[in-house]
Amino acid sequence: LLPVIYVITPTYTRPQQKAELTRLKSVFLHVPALHWIVVEDAPKKSQMVSNFLESSGLTHTHLHQSTPQEWKLKDSDPKWRKPRGVLQRNAGIRWLRSKFAHDANPRGVVYFADDDNTYSVELFHEMRDTHKVSVWPVALVGGVLVERPLVGSNGQVSSWLAGWKADRPFAMDMAGFAVNLSLLLNKSGVEFSIDAPIGFQESVFLEKLITQEELEPKADLCTKVYVWHTRTEQPDLKQEIRLNKVGKHTDEGIEL
Ligand code: UDP
Ligand code: MN
Image 1 (cartoon, helix red, strand yellow):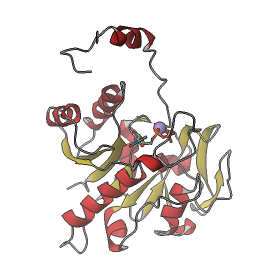
Image 2: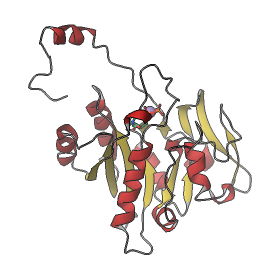
Image 3: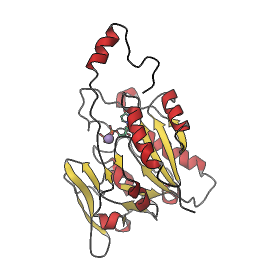
Image 4: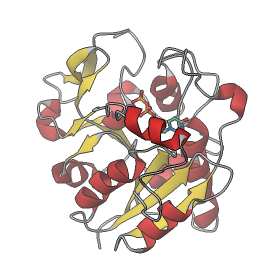
């Protein structure tokens, strides 16, 4: 029996949300033994996401956890200003903790998958066998084409190739690692911290779990790219906004 991959995805309401979730669904449907934990950044679960997951054909859990207003990004803030998805990922971790509260050695793998990245089916094949924490390259992130762990001749991660702060203890994006379920749950209280220094979210989390020598390099010793930190352009809604002012909405009676 394959260990189940628990994929935790924070998501929030916006015009392209269903498109993002659809791209993920299309890949996840090709991955056996995957359990999708979708956590909406909202005061309650939305009908759209509920319907979407119900009809997805995927094993899923639908949660919600809103980010307090004072932690939200304002339009004027640069993107890196405040952490996004932190409380939602933690809600997913807590759900796993309570699901396996009476299981001393739960089998599985945990992966944190933002809703706007691009994932390949191969990525999930790579992470399936994760004893502690496995790692691999992530493309289009941190101002470079690819960020990746550098692997020494002993097969261990020796350092990091990153455009920004390569001296972080774990200079990796959220999309670049997966954690063994037992390791995560047996270290009580390990979560993402809302007050980690900017850009240190992943590093601070991993420091609580593992040492660099213990990391398991995947994707042909971290020489293959199976995930891209893509970002979606804001849709042009100028005409929609104009129509809304005269009481017209093109999505009346239509869910998108
Ligand atoms: N996110 C969220 N609430 C927000 C903003 C973002 O739940 O107010 C989610 C988003 O859907 C994504 C994750 O947090 O799954 C990371 O956000 P984003 O992709 O904007 O971050 P970046 O690509 O800039 O690292
Ligand atoms: Mn993103």
